[in-house]
Picture 1 (cartoon, helix red, strand yellow):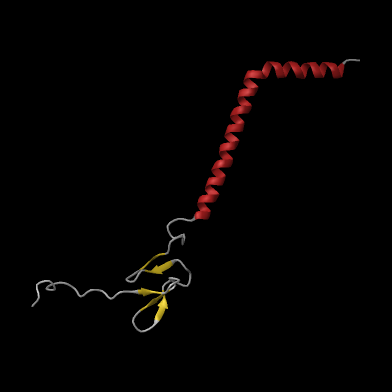
Picture 2 (picture 1 turned 90 degrees about the vertical axis):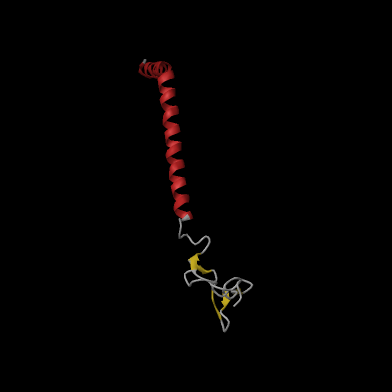
Length: 107
């Protein structure tokens, strides 16, 4: 009995993939390495989520969320700028409007 192999499992067979990575050789035939929906990939032992498959988070959802957040952020900034202008220049704006209304109402 060889001491190096005692109690050890035999080595797993090498999995061979096609050049494009879409197929794997099981020793008898080529089998698909990617699920039909492209969400899973065979790694040689188990099926795992395919890179970029959206199983861990959707890029589209993230893009929509960022777009909405940016839009809300712009609205907040515009509201703050408008409030600052009205608060700091309120008297001058009121003066301009009163002069315009006075000029329009004069004979």
